[in-house]
Length: 194
Image (cartoon, rainbow, N blue to C red; front, top):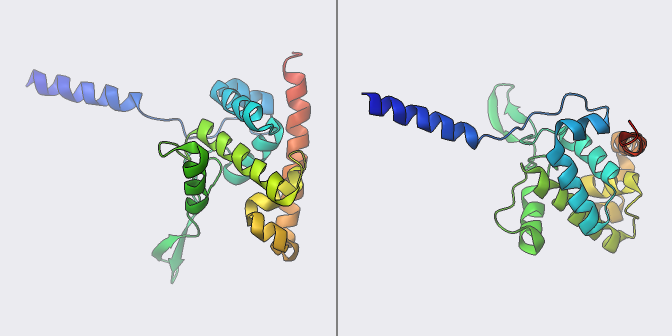
């Protein structure tokens, strides 16, 4: 009997070692607090910044908008007749809310099959890759977070077609993402001075 108990305890311990922290940091309004609470975020964002030239405040603002820094975030379920679940609004998942098809394209080009949308390092690398492709295909500057977000949300071809122009709510949200990037940038510049 004691060997069964030991095996159960071992399983619980091993299971907890593999558990990931998917909850959001406590203070999403303060970039310094986010990075202080989750040092792995800083490493992930810095790696993407070095690799792709993507500004960290812009990536952080876009992740805030997409998932509120919740690693396993998904769109809500849709219901028929208000009670029968019929699936999710989209296949978006993780920090970056990357869709299945776009994530597969990323995996095939640079990320590899083991990359996961719920991993902050892979999500930051994905965003850097995506934003770099946006620059190449649309000419939108890496530092033009408003238009980078519009291209991220509607896809690069949708952005080029101007699908966002008829979405007043999206134009407003893109402005909010841009403002958050400016706020995070100012905060990050002051982090080391405290």
